[in-house]
Image 1 (tube, one colour):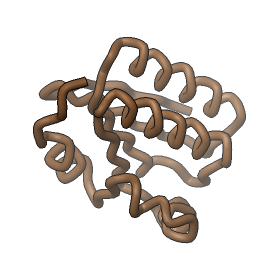
Image 2 (cartoon, helix red, strand yellow; image 1 turned 45 degrees about the vertical axis):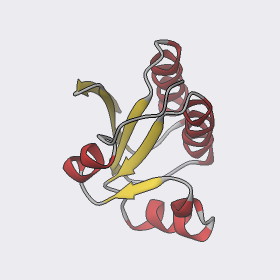
Image 3 (tube, helix red, strand yellow; image 1 turned 60 degrees about the vertical axis):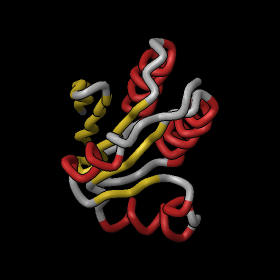
Amino acid sequence: MEIIQTEKNGIVCVSVKARTTAELSLEFEEVVKQIIQCDKRRLLIDLGGLVYLRSSVLRVILNAVKEINQKRGKVAICCLNGYAKEIFKVNRLNSSISMTESVESGLNALLAPLKAA
């Protein structure tokens, strides 16, 4: 299990690489909470390295979207694989969360100016 956090042009990118476990869910939640507490308003979540999307990871993502949207920020998710992509589409989450095919397109989607908080 591995969570990699980088920052580029004011956008925090969190890459998750693992077969999702309960441990990963807790670690992922802690990383995302720290990002939000630091008043970061642009978050890119790279799920390309996930084999399986647990509901606990989905909950962390949805909470992050809610909190960052309240701060007038933006969240994008990139590199979704088959099952994970299907979860987002079936639950119609792709209409409320920017979903992109690559990290680069995700970064580009988040470069637009933000509204004042």
